[in-house]
Structure formats: C-alpha cells, structure tokens
Image 1 (cartoon, each protein chain N blue to C red):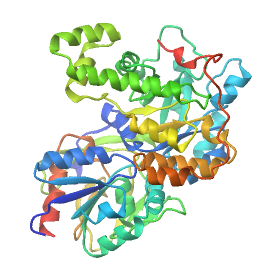
Image 2: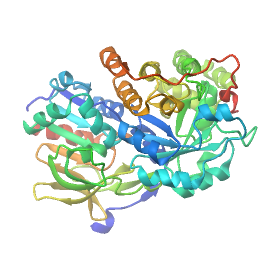
Image 3: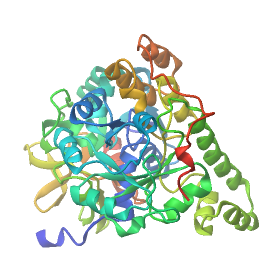
Image 4: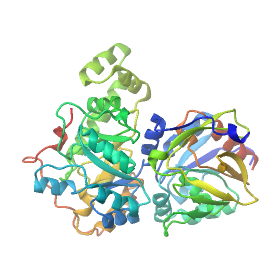
Length: 197
Length: 298
C-alpha cells in the first residue's frame, strides 16, 4: 500500500495504549485506532497485536468475535506486528500454552510461552537489529522464546542463538516490548514494512 | 559478532518491574485460595491470580491475625497456573517478602487486607527484585508507595465487602487530584507536595504527564461486571476481584463476565449481555459497622 493512513492496535487486553502512543509519535499524520470490534478492524490498513496475557487475549478474540475477521484480513495480506503475546498469537506452533488457546499461524515459528522464565527472569538487553541504530535496548517481560523458524522467516535480531525479532512477508513479530521504551525505531521499521507491502 | 549480541543483560530494572504491570492492563486479577480456584480463574481469562489463604470476606468474618499464605499453597497454585501468580504480605513485613521472592512469585502485594506488621514503615521495595503492588486511598499515599519502590498502585476500596462505594471514593480522589495538579502552576506544586506528603519530583512528574508514573488498578468491593466497568470508566487500568467471584453463587460464569466487562467497559450492549443470568452476587455488607482495612497504611 502506498500511503497507509490507519493503523489498528488490538485493544482487548495488555499494553495497547503504549503502542498507540508510540505509533502517534512516529508519524503525526497517521491515524491510530484501538480495535475491539470487527467493525473497527475493517477500518485499519495494518494491525498491532500487543503484549499482555496470550491466554486472556486468545479468549477475548473469540468473545469479541474477532478471531475469524482477523484471520481473514491476515490471509488477505494485511500487515501485522505482534509483540510478546502478539508473537505467540501469530506463530504456527506454541509450546507450554493452554489447550484452549490458539494462534493465527502466519509466522512459521515454534514459540515457547514464558520460555525465558517467570517475572524474576525478565530482563533488558542490548540488541543488534538490522536497519536500526546499534545497540538497541530491548525489554523482555516473561517473554516467549522462539525455538525454531521456518525458511520463510527472516531473523532481524537474536539473543544467545534465539530469534527475538522476525519478519515473514508483511508480518513482523518480537519477543520483546518496543512499546516499553522511548525508542521509536522498531515501530518505524514496522511502518516501513506497512508502506512497502 | 555473536558475542557482541548481548552487551548488557540486566534483570529487575524499574522498566522490567513496571513492565509486567503494563502487560496486565485491561485485565482482571482474581483472588484464589487453592489450585482449583486458580484453574477456574485462568479458564475464565484472568490475567493473573492472587494467591491467599482466605478471601477478604472470610478474613472479616473470622477476625484474628491474617498473614502471608503457606508457601505450600502458593507453590501448588504456581504449578497449575501458566499466568502470573501474585501473593500478599503484611504491611512492613519484609521477611514475608523475602520468602515470596524466594518462591518466585511474579508480584508481591504489600496489603492492608492482612494484619499490619509495622505501624509506621512500609517495606523498602527497591531492595527487592520482585516487583510490588501497594494499595492507596488517595494520591499522597500512592506517591509515598511509589517513592518506596511500588511498581503498581491499586486503589484500596474495602476488600471483602462487595460494596463498591469505597473503591469509587479512592479512585475519584486519586484521579481528581491528578487532574487538579495538571492545572497547577509551578509554585503551587510545592504546596501540593506538602499537602499530599509526597515527594516533589513525583508531583512535578504528574503535572507533566497527567498520570501516575506506574499503572493504576482498582481493588476492594468489585462484585459485578458493572462494578468492573465503573472502575475502568473512572480511570482504573485493570481490576482486582477478590471475594466478588468465589463468594458468589456461580463463580465461573461471573468470572468470565467480569473479564468481558473489563475489556468492553464502555460498551453498554456487551455489559447488558454479560450481566444477564449470573445468579446471586456475593451478599455484601454496608459500611456503617465495618472495620476499614483501608485505614491501614501510612
């Protein structure tokens, strides 16, 4: 799309308000809306799926009748960016999840929920990210661990051998939380992806 | 190149500790007293559970001293839960906090619902890697807790009453004073800091940002989906529900309804739908003869 005007942030639960604020800071002309209903979803050109509790968000996707509309939009090529729980919801395979949670499966990756441990193991680290000023400070909260990716997936950053920022076509996902910092570079990377896809 | 990837790996920074609270926003944290209740809470879509020995309504009924839960019960809940597990300590009881941190709980609640251990000091929360949530009845109390290292504030309300009136009072007091501070000029901020008994830099920060430096959640008295939505519309960013779920007639559907109401807090159509046919809420009690837990905390 040439001139993306509306970015949606899935606002069922989690750190959605921070994403809205980051996106607005990236580009004042961008329209950023919270998405809680199918009607709101049809208004957006791209969707951010924020961090939060993936089990809770998965349940609310069904309760708010958003699961099928989002799957449809993703199949049509809508760009999306998932952070933490959002990464889990975009992956093809989830380990240590709940039986009743399910994902959209648009990034060919195996992701272990809470793979880096509990809150006491949550951490910050410097990353090298392709296309981003070095080093990038990333915040990981009870983060999911990417254990394997398929050939269609490009690894943009990794830590100790595990991918933490990946891209596959018009989909981007991170194990960390760019919305918890003041650094806009990762959101800019996503907006660039939206523009070119 | 590989060895340059991790330049610095730090745990328990302020961002990391406040970060988990950010992830719990728009969610419901449920009090549970055993693994079975924890499963019901997680099944219903809770974002976290609070492990405690007795729900506040039973603490009120039984009287006596209430303390940190048995570690065996806490680890039992950690084993069945995939969502974050929180647990409570008595105000000022830093040894209970050391034990909970050792057990690996995800958040410690320094709570007025338990019997206070110290009548003038709260725990120095900067001394811990595990993040803390604390209750507050007004903005001054909230800022004192944040100055001690709290990474999340919950308005206290009155736990175990099923009566929302105190939660509304405390939320309105906190958000109302925040609004007033944003209107104050720089000289008036000194007076605000003095009046609130709060550190000046935090008051100045609120004047700039128009919000608390940490997430503001609501607790104490939520019994219905409408109560949860009321708290959210009054400016809470998440809700704690204690006795309201497991003291009601049919906990599972009520828990799920409160989760839906918290997400869709400004949509009367959803609120009307989820409020239907939930059975009797907890009976609840009036405030006249009630011991006020909220007065504990200094």
